[in-house]
Length: 234
Image 1 (cartoon, helix red, strand yellow):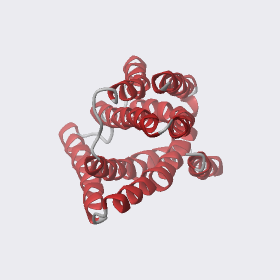
Image 2: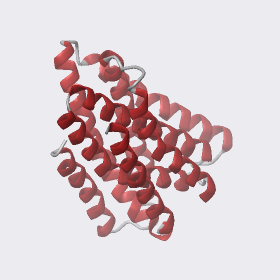
Image 3: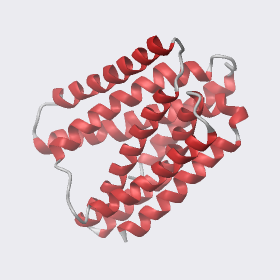
Image 4: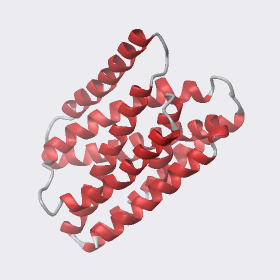
């Protein structure tokens, strides 16, 4: 059942990605929406999970926050080193690194579905529905990040398929192993830092660089509100 539901995330991710590829002429609006989605994912999905695991393990919250700062700074340094080396503000490698990080998170989404079914069928279904709902945005985010950093359509499509397959592989992997919660806690902090950086430093400035408008602002707010509503069903 876990693998079957994870297959629906595959199609949800592809739908979002192909939407982004088809409407590249409206990339500034898509990026505005993407920034809101990323903020919503960090605030309403990742942070609550960090708090829940921290309470369950009775560990200090400072450890995932250290991981958050590390994620933010590592990607900042990576981006700026590439900018200095190539003398340009956008580089395909940055987009590739961003898309691979999103694929890693999608893999853990699949792991979450599989582990949910290990707890109970009801828990697994609820987690799967939440993942399916926001994987449309994952596909959109992957394509947006690849295109804004000047990757080709073919390369963006390849990373889109990787991101779409990641939850299925994650769900399958739970038949072989489980992720210790203390490791998951650090990963979530690190990924939150990465998302905050690309949202604030890359996506929002690009969304408003040439086409700043009230529509873009509205879509950013709408993206954050949408993720809030989706996570209420998790």
